[in-house]
Structures are given as C-alpha cells and as structure tokens.
Image 1: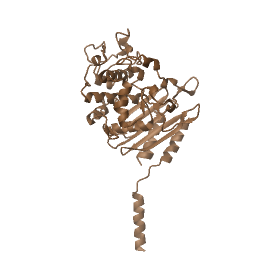
Image 2: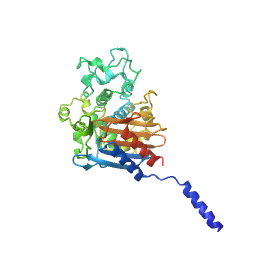
Image 3: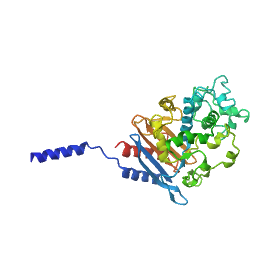
Image 4: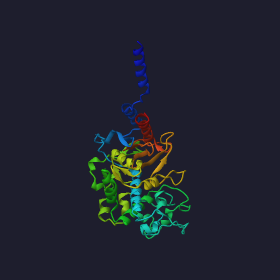
Length: 380
C-alpha cells in the first residue's frame, strides 16, 4: 500500500511540474474571433521560439473577390519593414569600408542635401537611417526630385525647423535616398543587390521588383473606404512601374522600387529573415552582417522614440516585454516583425486588410494577434 501511495505521489508531482503545453488550437480560435470582430480579410502569422520557427498559419482570404484562400505561399508588400532590408544592405557596405555612417549624404547621393535653416550642419547617413535628419515627406518621396534643389523649386519644404541630429521625424524619403546610395556605392541595381546579398544567402523568396516575382502569389491588399464603409482592393500596392524601370537611371530612379516600403515576401520567409537579426546577423548558416552591425541597428539613438537604424524598440506591444523590430502600414496592409534577441523568440503578423484602428500605438488587429500568439505559443 505504501508503495502505491508513493508511486501516486511521484506521478502527481511529475504532472504538476510539467509545463503548460502551447495550444495552437486555442490561439487559432481566438484569432478567428479577432478577424470577425475587425473584418479582417486575411492574416498570415509565424512564430519563432528558441531561435527556430515553431508555428506558421494562414487565415482568411488572399483575394476576397475570387475567394482564394491565403496560404503560406502568399506574398505581401510588407510596407515599412522593408526599411530594415535597406539598412542591412548599408551595414554590409560599411563593413566593406565602402562608406561610413558619418558620411555626408550630399556626397553620397550626388546633390546638395542641407537644411537651409542650418546650412553648415552636415546631414550624415546615420541621421538619415535613424530619421534624425530633419527631413520630411512634405514634397513627397516617390522621386528624389522632391529634395533635389536642381529639380524642385520648393525643395526647402523638405526640411523641418530643428537642426539635423537633434530631433526625430519618421520620413520615407530618408530610405528612398538610402536605396539610391546602395546603388551608387555597390554598382548594383537596388532590387538586385538585396536579392543577391540578403535574400539568396538566406534562401528566401521575395524582392522589390514586381515583374521578377510570381504575381499569382500576391495577396490582394484591401483598404477601408470611409465613404463606402467597406474594404476595397488597392491595385497600386503591386503596380509594376514597368515603364519607369525601362527608362531607369542607376543611382537616381531607385524610388521606383520603394526601398522605403516595397519588399514583397511571405510571413514565413520574413520570420526566417527576422531570425537573422535575432541571432545578431547570422542565420541559415550564413552571416549576413557582423554582430557589431546588428547591435548598431538595434540600438536606439533616443530613448524617447526608441528607433535605431530601421530597427525600433517596442515596449507597448506586449505588456512588460521589450522587443526589437518594425511595423508596416500601406495601401490597407498592416504588418509587424518583432523579436527578443536575448530570449530568442519572435512573431511576424501580416494582414492584407482590416478595419482601421490603433491601440497603444499599434494596429489593433496586429497587437491583439501578437499577444494571443505570445500567450498561447511562447509564454506557455
């Protein structure tokens, strides 16, 4: 009898000591409720745990008109997460000593880039990558003509009232200039550089050039139309801009590919790319950037904004957690890529359309989904 009691005690101790198992079924049920509540068209997610992809899933539709389902093969224009690919490319060139983060942007892009209110203050590459350049998007950012004094008589509108390096304003033009610099320094067309030096080594399918990708894999993006009170397709998200590319001028036409927001990739492959940054520059057996470069990208230049070099610090996405990564929002799409470089977990969430709304500075659907995935598939 004593032996039986002892055996039962040991068994109960083992059971009580066992960790609570991750529950993808529960996570999926909660996510389905979130999608219904916020009219989400489609949602692709990937979870990384202990430095490896532990879960991926595609919910909803790739195309609402044809009712085609979203799959792991579906690729999205991920918006501003694209900036990190541009910054990673710059760090590769810095490592090769082809340029420096302290270089004068004017010399790198080939025309004068100076805030007219502070003409003696050099605007450096580091300032541009960290959005501390005092440059804004008031004149647009789809062409470098916006800020080129030889092309736009209103070029001075591109600058804010504070001195470069002393303030922060998120600016897409910063990264379209960055893409141009990558071309000028490397001698390779921007989209081809990223493919050759980042995507291919990591074994990822994606890119900035629409015509070089399988269009059947594009997830249609839907934007909420306030007057119609419904989500409508955004064909501009995948505009090929073939004519502009046919007349391409190396080192100037780069914004055609949108280094600031034009990467097309799946959630799963974006997670594989995220692992590279999580592991401080190395993944898939390939070192893409050095540890020092990865740390530079992840280090915020100001605690107030928490922005490094295309890698931001998020403290309000998951309560009590400090994460590194980036968000994206364009044409109706919302995306997030965030990770903990110490605990080696991370989450990618992409939606191709949902009702607009923000909570604590993040798209509500993205934030809710990230928290569900963390609670059910990482914390447990």
